[in-house]
Length: 462
Image 1 (tube, rainbow, N blue to C red):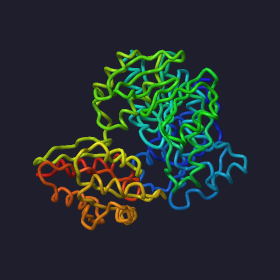
Image 2 (cartoon, rainbow, N blue to C red):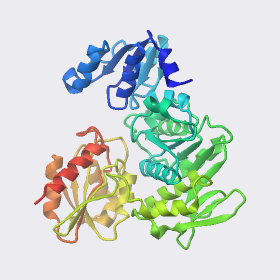
Image 3 (cartoon, rainbow, N blue to C red):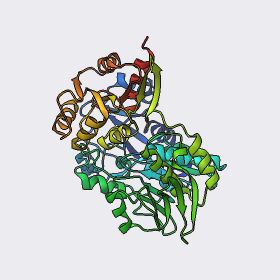
């Protein structure tokens, strides 16, 4: 079925879209063009939606806005925004009334005419997804990058050809109860995350597993052998598993040899060196893992020579250990993507001298115990802000390595003032790292907005 045929079938039907954010706006346009009876439900008020509201209200799209936007949620079909999980009571009640609940991404998988590579995980999925896209592009393939990064791809379906490749980053929110069958499915790792939205850790893990539960036998599943929760997924795989590991040789996949060489292992056991890990341009062992993950996903489709060339040239993704500026001898690094303790731990491990750390944000219900010892080891001054400031401070002060004043801890409510205070305390040779270990949603729309503000503050210093 083509996108045009799918949309034509919705003409005259009552279609409700929950969420008027950027990910759903192309969908709303498609539905309006198809002649569906469209209702958009969103917590925002008309003024907050700006010209989008004015344009589509004039076209006959109905809006249910404000605090009561979920009251009486109904329709023949309901498209949910990713963070609005199917387990939400309003959606459950709508299903009982006969509504079909789906999402833009679910429809995309049903209509996509080309092979798909889908990546999920608790950490590293954006970099891994981006590297996979770069590898395919370097091999001469036309790539459509989307999902949780890039842009929504549903509107582009009819422009895709069978020779193209769709490369998708998928969150647990998108995957929850979703039936998809990517040709290559990747799980970078699994650790407690988003427990403020998922009902528990098992619900979060089960959502991640949706990426491979409907795969065909001729597909590929890539798993992290070094992460116990991820490795356990192999028992439920519907297709052969390719592993990646930095701790030891794998039977099939990619691993880091003891001499520092990244090697691929084929099904027959043949081993092919790709490049030394030291040649990878972006810093940190977690980025070595990200490269190995991408190599395992595309082994057999991309040559080792192209893999090595991309690894040596890829400079990273914005907001991921991004060097913003070196000013008066101080290096400022934006790691706003670090929305979990594990991600901040990986960032801290990239530096061989103690630094100044800015952390804190919205509480996701994740413990910060593991962060305490690492902060004591890697941080000399800690600046905390946001909802999780107290929890992070408690974790650091409870660490066996903590001594009063080592690190020095400062708590400042305002984010801008926090950055300025950290900068004022820095001396030539210091590194100021903004790696929050928390989500941004207490003050920002997303981690990008948080990172952009950090960049702007630093660039305006004089």
